[in-house]
Amino acid sequence: MLVKSSMQQTRHYIFIDPRDIHGKGDKNTTLMEIQAIHRRHYVHGEMVRYHGYDEIHRLLDSYDKELGQLFLQLNVNYPALLADIGRYIILYVYGGVYHDLKCMSTPRLTDYLNFLSPDVELIGEEHPTEKHRVRNTNIVAMKKKSPFLDRVLQKIKTRLLQSKEARGPAAVVDIGSGIYICEFQSNKTNTIFKYPFQHQQMLLFDGNIYKKNIKKWQNTHEWIFRR
Image 1 (cartoon, rainbow, N blue to C red):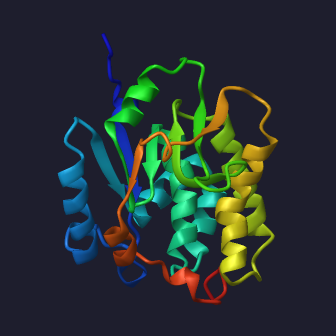
Image 2: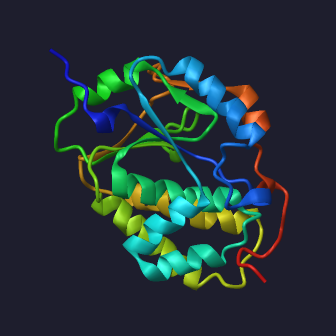
Image 3: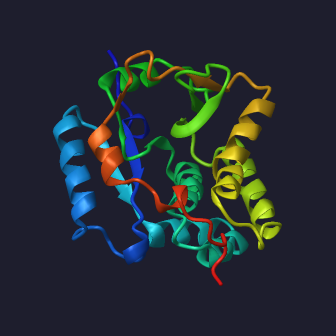
């Protein structure tokens, strides 16, 4: 009989509003609309968790105080960078499945995860069109305190320390997703691999959520660190 574990059933999301950075989200109209869509979809026992700026900082501070301080110094008008860092620490601490808000997993994903070897550490999402690539839109951490995610977080800390004068979306991508992608490309173990979740009908993309949550970082060229 198939037994579902809490980690394989957990779905993590991040919502950060630069206009209300410390807001809990319980009165944010955009988040409430997104959550309503998620509730209609997740009816198979999934445990859906939403994380915000303050929780991400708390987790980072417990993990590495220097990285936690760097996070506080980042320009909040780059919520995508904050969310990139957030997904790695959330999965490092809790394990489970991370999705961008616009993505939802189907029961096929849970079934797939339940049949995996217990040795599997982490699964990245194969890019749906450029199959040689991985992207950080959807990530599965099968173990807490993943050494892979630890390396990613430490390299992000180093890059942030070197990027006090950086600005613009290219720098955000280089730090936020670029380090994760490079670490994946250099991986040589078979306990970390990419998988075509979308082509295996394990993911759904919601265009309405995407429109509600377009990130300002796509257009701004402000400094990455607060001035």
